[in-house]
Length: 552
Image (tube, one colour):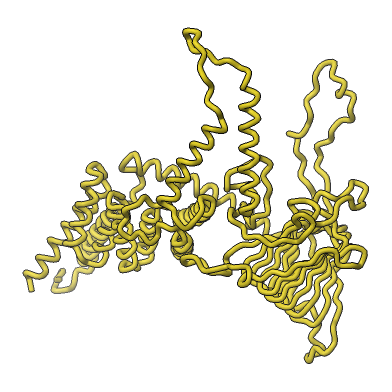
């Protein structure tokens, strides 16, 4: 490019270069926006269903933010002690005793975890730990109302300034070997968690308040209750009114534990004793769930320690208790065995019978005054139960209704966590959670019905479609295609599965097949703007590809 007297005109050259760069940037931005539109990344909803999904997503993101805050605060109160025994004696020929006091606990730490320690040795959680204080925030909502001429108005004023509670909030033992742990301090939640321990004895002493134990994946675990109180057996003045095992909520949950020994010891003598082993107790692999995942519970029944299989999981570790008879197997529900579920059903029948007896002397008349025979609540319940049982026997052979409900509930919980991870941009975590969901769903008896002739007990096609979207985000287009294809085979009318199949094919450069899938998705939802844009984009790419081939 020439300028004055044959010199290069750099100013003009710079202008033209900037113009070309700007043009290129605009074209690139247009391609990016088109790709985002094809993948459904627009800011505004293109359909009513998408608007609903966006509202749900916003709510899930809000809840996740709150949960992350809770998790951060929880981590702030956890004290982890490792390698508790000294390493002076490398041969470990002598047994060492280490006493844990409040001096070993950092300020503000109230959840204690003992981990990664090998014996031989003894660990004593001293009564001094019961002096640890946690401040309870004030709650003005607890202020009682007063009414005119009420005798309770003379009662002392409630001071909602909060208060303090003493002891550890929770205690966990993880990866301990060849040692004894004596617990003598107060545990506020009454929960002890034990995992991945080998040749460990846990002594729960009379001064502690451990009510529920959750043990997982341990070998040769001994749990001893030495005059230990029940959760409901502590008198306000401090003495024991009930011993562990005398209340129905005193329980030991265990999964994947080999060689579990449980003893209750009173006044130095063994009162009750039992052994359990997940293999000997009949735990078997079901679907993709291993035998180690089967949950058992050991408790005192009719004066004997008995081990039973848990059929309905409670919330968290199955340790929460619901006050309502026959509560749903959801948040706040109580983990139940087959025996307990039969007892609940029996109580329901008794309640229905009592209602029928009460209504027996009441006449029911219609508008014309004619007497109408009342329908028996108990008979109606039995009829409905028989109808349900017939359907269950037809569709769900091999599993009881309660077992199916427990699996479906767990799958739904995992799927919700996966959705939250996806919305947070944690696509690898979302894939893991979706995979766990599908693995658990494989336990259901309809999982082998590949043809989809029966209604799914859990919507696998939704999870597969969601996992496909996660794979797309990470660029694993072949895996995304596989999941979307399987989702379409399970539910051909599920538009998201068909749509994501088209997106995966498009990302792999298989534009003709992508157009076919996207056209099928548009046929399901003709007014969906996302699908229309993606189809147009695929057609453009197909034309560009054909021109390139012709130019060659």
